[in-house]
Image (cartoon, rainbow, N blue to C red; front, side, top):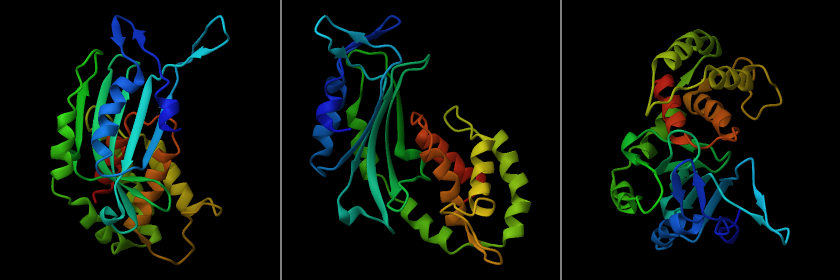
Length: 246
């Protein structure tokens, strides 16, 4: 989706909450990040029901919006692009707006995050209640994530050890929470299948070869990338790292 299409989003009312048009909320973030980049990746979800006017035009509203500002090449870390994102959701019982910083794997577009201070969550009740100033301290915070990637690439375990650890990872997924979220056990199981069962998977590991924690991490985060729901992508990705203890 391009910015012009996103900016066609109309004002809407959800329950007793009134929201302005999409541009009203997104443009300040775009203006702020345009000082650093002109590359933006945009996703948005429409509601299930839309209105058609007498001229057969559809009034488009977006209940969930995700804008990733891709930072310049000098911010690239180990084949990962640095992104600064704005995400909001106005549907559901907990309308929120989130700002976060992360790294995106160029090979598979999976998000990579390990630092909780890179996320800011705000209630989003409509009107003018978004605090965009939080983006600056997120941008200025110390980067430890880029140091974690080489460590994972150099940490190898045997295939049978991965099978042994599956129980630990699934147990952790039941116990660990982050910002009210849990990691689905399906993410772990499908990640395992992509490495050791599905020979057509890009993550398939041949027999008698050790597997790196970086490969395991991406096999699991790929399951998140493949999901349509992006609202809790940061939290879910943080939980992958916590479950794997990396």
